[in-house]
Image (cartoon, rainbow, N blue to C red):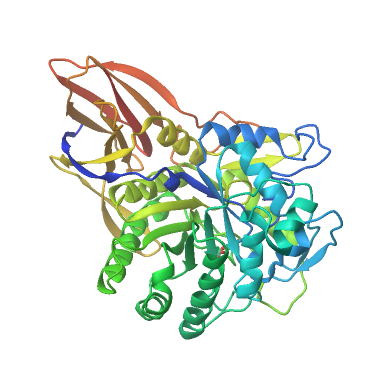
Length: 496
Ligand code: AHR
């Protein structure tokens, strides 16, 4: 007999307002993310500015609120001045060891964000760059006309300032993989001086700084520069795969799906112990289940870089494991809506992204459909809830057998409505489960992504293998009963 769990929500107990920016995206100058992925001048799928309209339309359908650019590791040696103006020279990208044409620069990024309908978020070069270079970039973007760099923008044909609100100082500068990596002391001093210069150019911006879940790093950073920061930037990829490119299977991936909430709890403790809880928020401005495959980029060897990187784009690698994990990640952000105000899925297009794009068109991967459901059907306010039980499932992660709760959920509603909107994940690889919920609505619409197997994926030959299915269920005697299939993500919406 199928196990039944009773779900009770507490509409009067709000956990917080959900920032729409948790549904953000990231694009980096890496392999085919920008060039070929979103930018393909002269191609039939692109507009006259060179932007792929199939990708733009797919991103519009998931209401992308904010996009971070240009890196990633790429930004650690990127000089923005090379990427603006009428005559641009290609440069050697020392982060990824390839040539970058500089055809896609600040003006193109802003124009593309306007087309997608999202907020631009710029990450600055704090590796080989300087406080002055960062503040010049801000001057170029945000000042109406004062100064050399604002006038340069006008000279480039753009009269109105871009008004970029979100700026990050650096990317992963704590790591030895990063060009211009810093010690905690060096970092704190650079962030403080860069923040001062940037805020003098435009005091209305919100600043983020590269961080990590480490007490020493945050103590130095926040004690020296915390007064200037609105956010700390945290990254994680739970199935790393950078060098070997071997991706874990469903069970190992889902065994790690408690990781995002553990990171958030750690960030909460760090900020709390340093007195910054409520003053500085968390931006998970790069996250994905899968790390990006870029073997040997730190080694002194020559090899077929692009051949290796092509392996990132294989659609068969991104399955229901990615979809289920991504929903658990978003659920953790929603349950911690008071702290996590931004998250950028990394990257948006190609590599480990939501969308695969080649010269023939696009494929929407299973993760895309999780964003499609969450951005279209969940509410803006997180509510408290209770489950009568949450059965345990046992999953192998390498040699360890881990026990996890079968269900992972959020309860939400829109501030202007009474209808409940529930996001719920069944992590189990093979078991279904029944949810029993009290409801005053006559009917509930159920949206669901599950695939026919836990390893289902979409590809050019089978683009509709995993999609959003939907049905309407009646509420009988004030109760809704719905069966959640294995390896599924569902959204239930009361039809009032
Ligand atoms: O593998 C892609 C890289 O992952 C990004 O450039 C970097 O920020 C992260 O380590």
